[in-house]
Length: 383
Ligand code: FE2
Image (tube, rainbow, N blue to C red; front, side, top):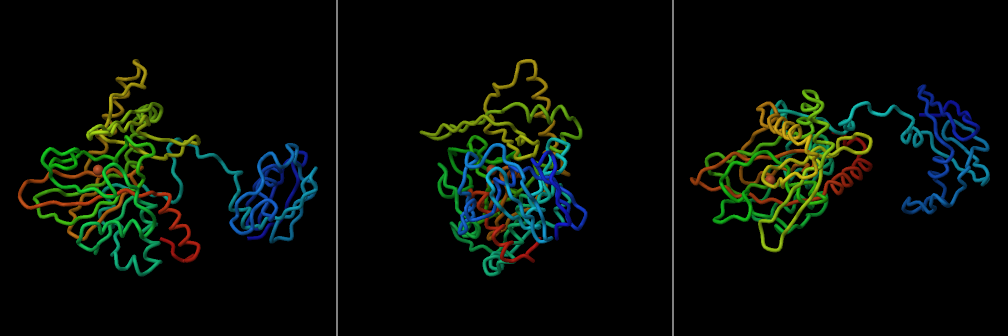
């Protein structure tokens, strides 16, 4: 896309750029100067900025501006510095857009879901993902979009789940180890290691930062029951907001507390809201875990009953059949969840047969980085 015209505005403190498709956006002189792409401003080899905000004048303005269609050429005053910006780059960086109107918005890369997704669970075979970068990009992109995906065909051996984490990043080791066993134990240190059903939850909200990805692989699953379930926390809080906006606001405004103290030498504590919003209202995360919720002590007395009503309301939404996807894992199956968004649960299972899963954590920023790099090299690797 080419630039059609450029005009100095606001006493040369800004520019108005119009592209050939009719789009228009304003850019401030100070923003353009800070983001100049020349080798004195940005290192040519790694793209990192070589200057600080103190290295150009506070009264930076546009001395001249012109375009040949392909790029914008600017001379900044009082420095007399010249810089040019490709038309496409400028269009991608435009910030002169309306602010999303509602709290709890998410970007285009995220699609919220409910039980309807049961008919099209994103799933790929391990061998295909390992040998074909395009298939890997497709699987990672499903994780980015849905916060959940299945993989089949893993080696049915202890530790095989690490090979999946290594496809896109690194395992995040915790006090539970590099990976942890999820099977019935006598005197378990965690209720996960029993046959009890577990309410849908995000893992380890008592950590700060929380583990952003969880992988769970199945080695044995012949017990009665023990089905796995996942719930889109982003969809659940959207429903909460639609049904009772005050409930959404209460869980976003006040911090909950979470704690794990089930092992010697471990006292993990966090103070974070159940609905985590960015400063611009973007929905960034959901924390929900009855087993590790600590006493809530950061909610004013007068609001505590309403807070509990909101907490109960969210729990009820999460329990609705239309919220969940349920499936039974077979040996060699794995599923991954974005632990900042998607809750997982387990139905209770009996002593007959056996159920043995292994879990590990990894980091979503590493997954998104691998995906973005793949998308640059495989531009047609769209979802
Ligand atoms: Fe869990």
